[in-house]
Length: 260
Image (cartoon, rainbow, N blue to C red; front, side, top):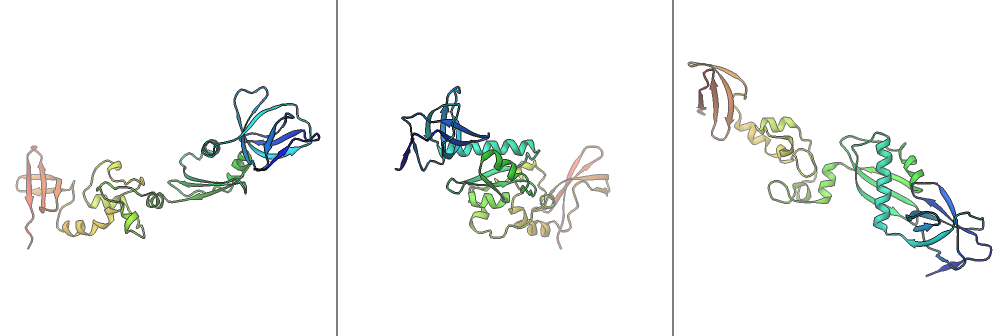
């Protein structure tokens, strides 16, 4: 490992404080600093907590504040800090529905890439320079669809099997809430969504069967005039070809449709 020792004309360590400004700290005569160190955790005179910094190099300029110690920082903790600062700036810019799902940090090139998901499309080209100024890194954003992210992540669906999008579903089709209505699935929205947070893909694949079996069946909520009076369609069982009527007096009756 290469080190450069402090020479007589070496005065200070120049850094960019993560989330802060540029700074300079005087180096003790007996301190050695790794020449290849890109990011570090330092302690300085007058501060109790350590500071994350990007190392810019050794300067001959004087510095008022003394450097007490310097260590390579843990990459996971560094990335966590960078992510939190990015989230904070996005929050200040009132962009609050973004979820960062992946981070790539290239310390050699000074580039950080954020992959995120969101309910709508975002152009963060104007926000990236603001975040870059605070992180002292070139910042890139890439948006990924929640379904595509779920496919990469993998998992088990509500049916107990491996996700369709992970195994065989190449092109993910558009899914609408109307498909759930046509399949008589009137449950809470969370019961209609997969691990991606979007409507279940199987709502589309089973739709044709429900549409075929629903032919000739009345719609739920429809009022029907019968010999007993006006009744309302309260429920449907397409597999038995039956529908339930509720009459004005509160009585109920299942009516079977005879197919010819």
